[in-house]
Length: 552
Image 1 (cartoon, rainbow, N blue to C red):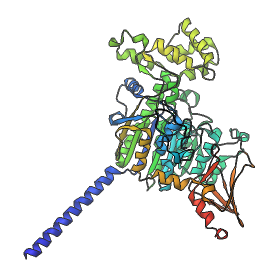
Image 2 (cartoon, rainbow, N blue to C red; image 1 turned 60 degrees about the vertical axis):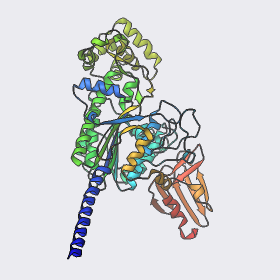
Image 3 (cartoon, rainbow, N blue to C red; image 1 turned 180 degrees about the vertical axis):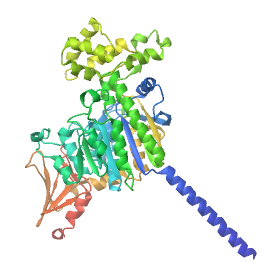
Image 4 (cartoon, rainbow, N blue to C red; image 1 turned 90 degrees about the vertical axis):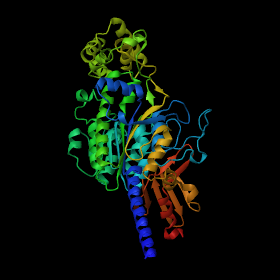
């Protein structure tokens, strides 16, 4: 009996231990690995800009209670980064070179900065969006810039220059991203249809053939309910938040695009990855324009509130809000407040800003080159009656800024009519705040690539293995075949593979393997790197070619 009781008690103890282990495992699953990730990138924003937005709002920003750390932003070339390598670090978990889009660094060493991995030099690097898609998750991109601009591009494409926007759009179209919302219609269409594509391709036809809805207005977005969509609401960038009601009232806001993307993507049973960029905070800071900054940053606050409330309801979503870098070197306090800062009231800081109802760029456009009209509009939209000296300074500086004459407005009037200071029209190199909520939330002071790696790990992705899977060196892995790049159509090169009576081809920047009359859709796009002369294709294509009967 004693033996039986001992066995009974031991068995009961084991069952209890197993029960609590299962409970613990379930809790760790809920806390340790999210089903969804929403990454919100506030381009060009530092801590001081968030503080300013809070003062103007008169309440805490929606996400600021979830401050968990900071991110170091430098790249392989410079202490001060550009958006392309900064976003690429978040997308791939690898630090790369200036202007590169999710491409391994060029390999030139910069004293004092970490050396780049030799095996990744000039090689496309798999992104977290590509990994999520291959895992069966839904994926989305939302921005107020062109969708081919540096930050969104880094999640969908691979080039050695952020300026290759026609190429970036082509890769984005063939990536199979579920929801893409922003500007940039010109890179989708050929010149004959009002676009900018010199290669003559109409990528809208490709999207239609792949079951996408192409939507162009806020009302289109409102009525869209399910499926895949490319929403391109402007030929180039979308309007600043303050300017949108005046110049393009049919464009949706960042908050509306974010809400729609979450609504559609959250129906995926396998979870989703969504990148949302408040693109124009950066441009506001480049222009030293407080009106533009506050308008777009408060709209980001609304978009983040939507994302945060979803994450709270869902319980299995990781939300991250972070900047790629700081821009403008903005300060609360300037040379004019150097002797009076200890007596600055909220009204002195806020009141001038609350009178600003249009961006400097919007005012300049309305003025249409008329100096007299400019003075009148500054009074109407900023509540400022500039002195003759201020107007002279604005007009003198405007000619120096070439394509961006409105930059002169922010530079002159911030210094004389607000309590804000600016140190540059460029980027700055400080660490940026990191906000995070949900399972696997990152904490501490991280390098930008570490943040990308942590997100990938949270989704169970091995980005290094994915890079090997998606980007095999075609010539190296197809030994015994004749592999050459056909440049017959200069802007649409094709990789051709031949052996015996096999003839296969893979158009660059597309995910198609052509064998005879058959088209096989690949799980990634083909990428040719001009600087190295190498072409990279998915291993899926390698295996398909090698297993053709005539290849054996």
